[in-house]
Image 1 (tube, rainbow, N blue to C red):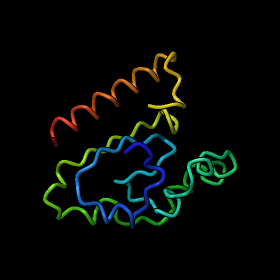
Image 2: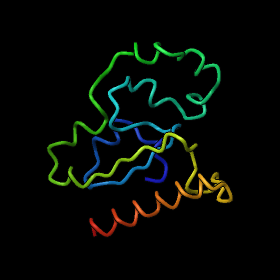
Image 3: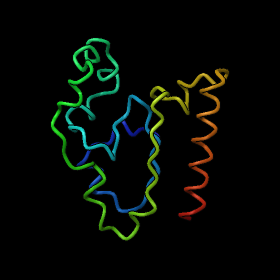
Image 4: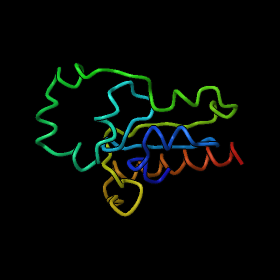
Length: 125
């Protein structure tokens, strides 16, 4: 998935094929049990210093938990082929136009993401 920030639980539930998602720190985490209302906020809002200040240590942990977004898919025959790897040290767009490929860490993570995507496509097709 190129833009996991645009995917919500309802859209994901309609999925009928395995997918590979490599979310950044700004994108929803499909396997987290944190409250989806926070995880599906637009990435620019979640990244806001004001929102982050509200989520000081302990506050995020106090949010109610719920079933991960991918849980409704667990009975699908292709569920085991889903690839989800979070890149918590990367920003939204890190593998595309917003990425700074001259930055050594960013280049390393983007290369890793591309390798994961290639492996996924080779295993599914």
